[in-house]
Image (cartoon, rainbow over all chains, first blue to last red; front, side, top):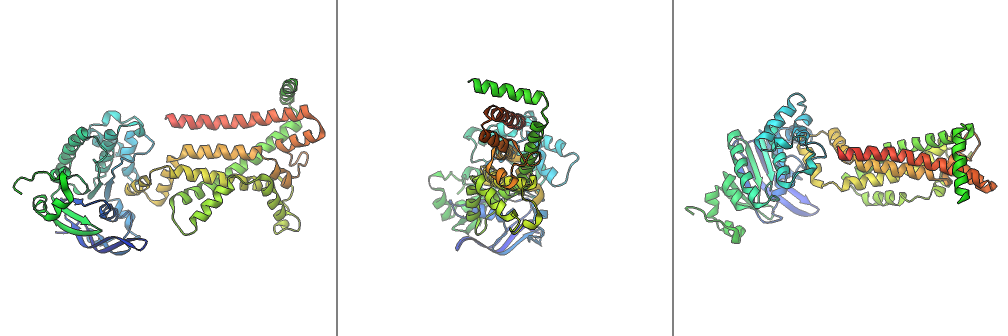
Length: 242
Length: 232
């Protein structure tokens, strides 16, 4: 199967320190890959590289077998979508925010209609005319997710998207997000610290520590790995059959 | 108090009577300071944006320069610009000494660091992740900068108000490079100094009211624009 995104022998440095050193990592179409690991493990750095937001100091990044360079990074970025922990909405209406990515990618006609459909899907269409900066954290993150899905990305990259939402809203949103992911068959890479999210969403788990991939496998398989216990500590949820 | 009342009445009389000299001085003041603000906006906003977003060797040195430049004494600017434009100075061949153009140049030098510094500060208040988010949405470099400008538009308007306020109020640079030539390079601040030196306090006071009226009107218009955008 052709990988949608892949890296080979990448190295990312900050000054003289290695932040990330990954020999090989690939994401297949339809997969939902969870990147987990302690703080400073390199999860967000890897996500930033995969999103073409910064190119690695060494090594190669491939998108649909094509090597990503400075010359085609913008074109590749326009086939991906990223959702960060903060909703990062701009000072304009909710609908304009949701349609922004489409407009930046040159889709002038129908952008607002499509964005509105996605606002409906995430239950925030009634806020369409409101200024996005007046929304609550949960509402804003729903708009941020709608903005990302409206782009119909080849890969959706998420950096702890539910971390700043209160517990009750979070579980509801995760359920809705899971339903949208499976109905759209969107390939996704999710950085998270939350094991419930991993279990609910991921088809594969990759454990990073000190900038390197330490283990990977299915959530069930990885739960049996000793490193899982080390990372999860008291958070470890009971794994059926593990 | 009588002085103030008399000055205010005389200011109204000068304006209502259509005093040609007062109108000429007021228009030149607006023209010089308006142009200087516009040029400082064209130079200062890109400078502020670049310094806020980019990381390069020597950046701290430049940021320090911009911050120090925000408090540049107009008299010092006037002196340096005069030395450059003086007949025997390096730019003396341009023949700009004692012209409104030289005044615009001096005022631009005064206002640009202020506009750049306030723009930089407005951009730095945005979450650094917002810049990544804009790029991740698929923005080209041009779209990226345009969105950042839109996002900090209120801060830029504040920078314009501060820049305009600073240059319309300065006297040292205009005096040094403009020469306060009647009907040619005389602006409100230099006229006020002249009238005070002549002991003509009531006229000086009247001119100061005109200056305050102009400054307040322009700043009020910009404030309305700023607050309307805030509510939109």
